[in-house]
Amino acid sequence: MSLKRKLPTLTQWHRWLGLTLSLWLLLMAVSGSLLLYKNDLLQLFYPQLNLAQPVETKNAAAVLDLFDNGYALMPTADRPWLEVVNADKTHFYYDASGNLLLEREYLGDLTSWLVELHHHLALNELGKDILGILGLLSLVLIGTGLIRWWPRRGSFRRALSVRFFNPFTKRGSQTLWQLHRCIGAALFVPIAIVLITGTAIMYAAPVKSALIFLLPFTQSIETPVPPSMAADNWQQRLELAKQALPTAEARLLYLEEPRIRAKHANEWHPNGRNYIEFSETGKVSQVIDERETPLGNQVSNMIYPTHVAAIGGAFYLFIVLLSGLGLIVLPVSGLWFYSKRRQLKKT
Image (cartoon, rainbow, N blue to C red; front, side, top):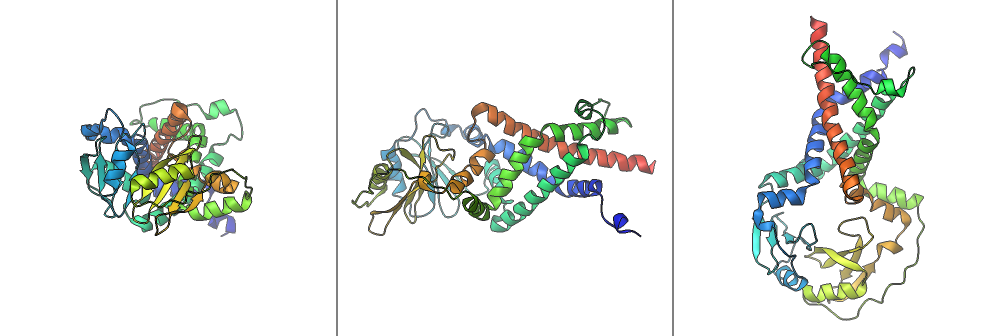
């Protein structure tokens, strides 16, 4: 037997990868699409979160002083509540007056399950490793699919056409096959963006290192001298953070070893990637302005907001939703076509 016969063909690689990854792609597509509306889901399931006004910094700081571990998300326009997550991954939500509105236990509702499944298959670090491998394989899957679709003869218009027949009939196999090819080709770019950014998030550290190596360029930004005063509570820390980075807004607070992440107005990341760190004495020990970091680091910080549609407004959100729809249609049509083809071969 020749070597050529022993090696799997491109079609076989695509089929095997499709059968292996279909259920995972469906899980990622459904959970990811729903999580684009995470805050809306929370307000739907928990009406008490529909606040008329956001939590004020003074009231938020008083609540934060009650916790000594975990992290907190400061209120924004799309999530007007103060959210604190402790070491047990229990979420606490507070209103404008600092009153506790809601306590959500880890994996205690649908939203929590969606987050854990999408982020790491509810398997913690092991899940992230698995997702990284599956993400790389999914890139091979869509790559082989595009190569198989690419017209050798005829026009692209014909390659994108679909003749619709009842999918439950014999001729329905043709519709399923053409629909699978058409959706995969038409939505290849948004699907590739979602899969590439999602996989890059799983390999955040090596991706960032590679980008910094390729794009080491930096620029000098005139930043204020860190304040010399000490902070004993979160109200004072937030005030010192504002002095250290006047153009940034505090978004994510680390409570055990006090540290603040802040966001510039034109920054892509919804929580920002600027850091104000505090020493044991309560003084500001370090200020990291993302704009002064290597260009590769800034590009790396754009990966997550690109994946979750935190940029680009309604148009880009629609594009990401289309990719999610495509990642639902592709495995369903592919599995259906494969099943019908096997049935037809038996008859």
